[in-house]
Length: 378
Image (cartoon, rainbow, N blue to C red; front, side, top):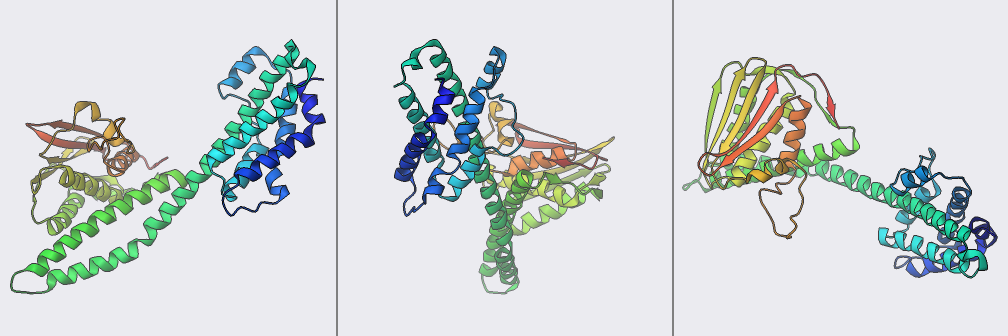
């Protein structure tokens, strides 16, 4: 008897072992019934049996071993199983453990068969392991994708719902700044609160854009004719009010108008200036420049402070990641701000780069064509 026929003949015994094992690892307070514990096990085994009974060339085997199995089209039993286990509170580790137990159960029973060690039996074991690995890959991919989507939806809701209390705090801070007292403490307190609100609002904007780019099809650009220098000046004025300890200098040369998304331009300016304040010299000078060029406008933000190593000039625009040493590195992990800036610049068909030395300071350069095509960046 070949292994695929053996699985069909011993289906109930294999599924019973699957059920017993699943019952021992179900989450605390779990009370899954027999159908839930056995869910999709038979369907997955039938898919495995069918795969094992299908002729396979060496090139097809090599392709499958590298994750290139032909797509099924419809939802697979392994994917449906992952959905069920996620709803039941199984961790991805427990999900993988189920497949390990299923593999062990089948092979333990099979190796009792006399023909299991013959050439055909060895070939069957290889095909069985390939099919199990394919099902495992489908389950893990489905589970991971569901967790990511749920997390993104939660973050999007959080970013949206936090805007109302932030608006209330901002209103209170503005009133504090207008109150008169003998030592000006109310004005100082109001400015500090506004600075904190501004940073939090920027973080929420970045968070919402990040989640939108992952679950909503990309960053939408609604372009109208606008003046980049005017947008930048408005953002600088906001930072002056909330960061009175810093010196802000503005320089504008040439025609700085073009067809852009005004709100997105504000985000680019806000994130780059906030980054300069965060990573520059305390209470240092921030220089914001706009310069019109033929067919494009250049925007730059300069600050002094510790330079960014040349090896990190590209990585700072990527999503935050931890260092191999586990220690924080401010130039390698700057959160979502610079990542969102890069995505917005790309959405405008522009480019961004950074130059950073101890003597010259750090300058982020953005170049935006005056008439970018309307687009969405995923």
